[in-house]
Length: 310
Image (cartoon, rainbow, N blue to C red; front, side, top):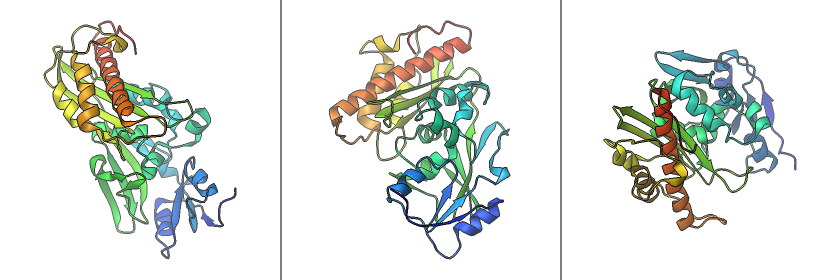
């Protein structure tokens, strides 16, 4: 199937892209990687009057650390984060754990991290990590530049705070302290499906006790979530000795936190291959295993033995 006819422009600067997006009230779409956009256009679920190709804007093809914050430009491809050396410290480890779950290599070579925020899909790995870390989204539009925090950005399935005529120029994540433990685990029906559930976990630990937990949930509601109730349940908890995430006791703090995430934080919907009971069970199990992975990662960073299943 071919897409409906559309006009096509290739701006060379952010200002030109914004002018094109806001010109004449036409329905416009931004093309960066195009891995979601082009499919939707071929299926004619999206019929833009204008496609604005931003791939020739050099200032968007940049990633840098500014004031202890990672700033990722709109043209940085997924595959960049496959290397743990791309971003320093635990944040780089977290991004590298997550990225290998995004589709498959050809998609990761062309698709962009920022494109995930333009799309706003509930099953986006990057968007859930942004929620967990209190990232923010930088936008440029006809009225100028503005910043939207991740917690205020996602409004529902494929609905975001981005206004007509605005371009996402970058996403900013705070770097994580060196001894922070991180984990990311995803469960899907087949390799080519979206995640049924995935969990990002970040643990700050002092003297063996969790002082802060951050948990992002993927495809556990109509938008990316942060599991605040589960996080509160973990504050002040001792991480204990290394554990196998696949053999956690029912009374383990991570198991309890997983159940809280599933029952209090998540708002799943039934799917053809997964009823609500199954979905909540999967969320609880994956959350507990991811927390175990993050705790083991913390131990390895302070010189202990990682141990346990990842």
